[in-house]
Image (cartoon, rainbow, N blue to C red; front, top):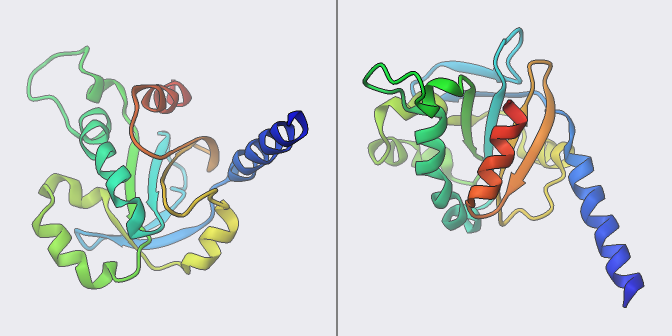
Length: 174
């Protein structure tokens, strides 16, 4: 039993270790229509990239949308200098790598807040190449990668939203 636990622990740690390194080159277009390449060259901000590999990850992904929007996208309407959205000045992108997204993009736009369109990328890069380089443990989970200013992945979380996972993302940025 101890051997099985040790082997599983080693495989789990190797799977997350494999995800750390440089974020692969990715090209696409935002829902606004702007071309974009990740990781961003010459940026002075960290970047958070949320990836969804399959529709089966959609329910877990939905648990992240509002907390991620409030923390990394929304800007305060007042002069509250302690507002979290003002403090975390990061680039944030969501990339649905699911089949049929190109066809569903207009429906997605209709159901999404307009100020979020610049943060959603329709990927032009071969998804198989991205999977091979990122090595997700399960394609049935959404993944969130924190990328430093040099293009290196410094943190990865996956699955349903929890405060602990959000704390990990925020700590990686700090």
